Length: 138
Image (tube, rainbow, N blue to C red; front, side, top):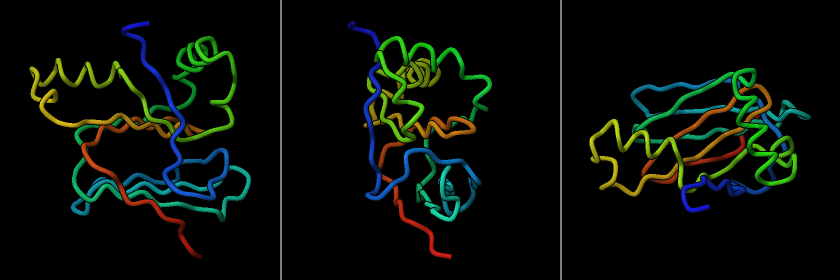
């Protein structure tokens, strides 16, 4: 379908667990920092750092994303989304919305839509650059 969004698997770092929980989101002077812990091994924590401010992000509790999960399961004929956390979205409605809201300013930038589809919520991020990702050591 021409205008359908397409979700692709994204492995931002090697050695990831299947599912994660979002522990914290800090949007401050150092940029956007996200800490996640493994759903099976909560000691397996990772940190994302978007050094510069991201263009947009939204966090939504899983309770309010049921329709998205049903759509993804129908579209991809699988429940892989229950067993993966990180995705890139092509032909994103979120990017189209940002373009409309910015009166086309967003069209002049190489924006990407990233999704952290965690066990407890989803985090949609629109950014123009790659982020740092690494495992946290206790």
